[in-house]
Image (cartoon, rainbow, N blue to C red):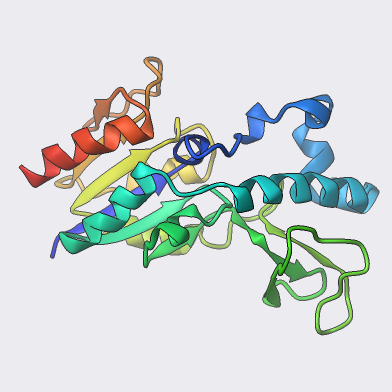
Length: 226
């Protein structure tokens, strides 16, 4: 069975109603990323950071997988599908995808501030000051913040190296190190980008499907099945 490796970004989840980081409105427009999504922010004002992620988590809980998410699940009947996502939501999993690697963490999980490997599910939508890990230390969002290493990038590179077909969907390849994964795609692999932006970074050897994720996935499927 041929291996289809997918790199997904915020654009695929935006069509489920989840605003991208840069699209957040209201209260969060007045804050820079560094003020709500960095280790420095956590040390300076953990309540503000928790409020920000509680706000985003509620949007994730209320959202549903869209046709693009479901189509990637359906492709498991024809291909060995591996998804590498920059998204922190769980829409790929809720669509039924079996093999998902989260580069930037998972918003419905929290981890210990003393032990990075101690990760727990967030039972409700809010994570609060005073919520402790089993070792008795404050829990923080299980998110890779600006300035932190991306632990799953090595695993992702090895997955990309095995691709027979490589699909970029919902991302403009502007966020590193995730964007650098395209450098590890095998030369003989079929390569596609689904993104409506006419000015998206030009990548040699990639066919650009200039549609949104939901519209473009059908075109992509037709191409690889034929």
